[in-house]
Length: 143
Length: 96
Image (cartoon, rainbow over all chains, first blue to last red):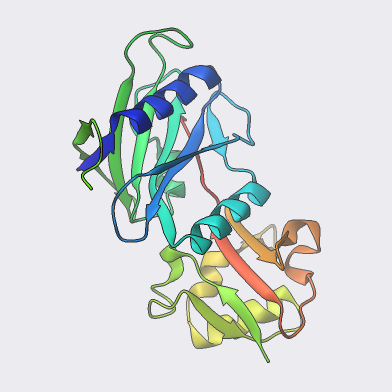
């Protein structure tokens, strides 16, 4: 199960809506081993594409160095699908490289940049195997 | 002195869970061969053969002293003792 606070959830959804029709991507970092998604880091989609996303390689290194310095890890890795359902594609599965992370997918296919509900789903992707998990949105993470 | 190589989570099965290992080599390809000797199988996760030529895998990023090796010679990028090498899988995907 992914437990995520409302503000972080809202930030991911807002990012996905803002970047529609391109795919938005980013991570939520948290203390290593804590499973607490605490710090949203929006990333630029270097692919700038409605069907593909990729973190810029230089920014990727900066991001990881910052996390290592803070003893953090990517607790959530999120991206949006802008014309299809919020389910990992074959590409997503093939390229998933953080077996400990929650892979969050948001689909903006219904309302695009506008107000309105989105699909927000979370998955584990390990060795090519996808397992959907429940998303528990809380007012604040337990201290 | 040797070259420190930072290993990403997904490849730590090859390093017994170690986050960083030491290696030697005057170029990135020599370093990868040296790593593979001590951690068999890791090379295949970093490089692939394309059109008869061995190259870094498209979705693996390698940095030498914070420089993406794609901009400094790829597998031929030179290395010296004390250099810091970081391996990071690309964070990428798509809807198709």
